[in-house]
Amino acid sequence: MKLFLATSNPGKLRELAALADAAGPERSRGEGVELAPLRDYGRLPRAPEDDASFALNALEKALHYSRLAEGFVVADDSGLVVEALGGRPGVHSARYAQTGAALPAGTAAADADNNRQLLAELESVPEEQRTAHYICALALARSDRLLALFSDSCEGRIVKEPRGSSGFGYDPLFYFPPLGKTMAELSLPDKNQHSHRGKAFRKLLTYLTEHPA
Ligand code: ITT
Image 1 (cartoon, rainbow, N blue to C red):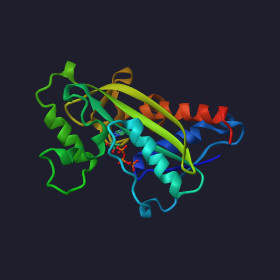
Image 2: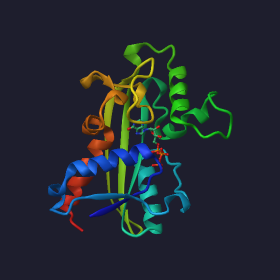
Image 3: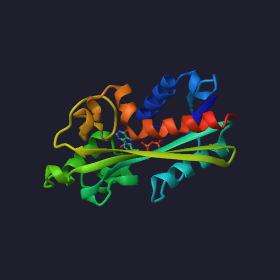
């Protein structure tokens, strides 16, 4: 079964592709799940992404691209929620640095800019109050019809200096206590085993097994 991924984020694509490979054919009635980037994604009109929740954004994205492309479309909306910051960056995780002083107006936020912004905002926050979690919402749609929504989270803490070079986004700052490492110090299979995205994707696989096309 083929699923088209509506994302421009190479980190998400890498992780989701590895998750589909790891699932193997036995997870979906002998067919296997094949993921492919949405054709001509860069040339399609962008989906609105201005909702107040990850779930609504994922649903909007999946629905939008399912109108423009053939087949099953999966959209991922995800981000980092930091308790001491009242839930920020939240749904604005990809462009967090644009909201602060770290970037001149109109400049796209890179991961390093976002991480700098996060460290600056948490500068005076003590370790025990630096709790955070990642959230991932995955929506499945086809031909202008929403089929399902899956979401999950992953709990951690924001460290004071970046560590590790794997992963993407906030991973060098996101410490995962059960493994004693930041997400950027984990191998891809280890991150996928514990991450918000890995857990949400496995729910999607279970759904596909139970609802064969
Ligand atoms: P698409 O909308 O094209 O999928 P995007 O990067 O704009 O790409 P989002 O709006 O969902 O996607 O924002 C996700 C941001 O949240 C991402 O850019 C990271 O900054 C952060 N994020 C999400 N999952 C993460 C993860 O597993 N590790 C680190 N950062 C993550």
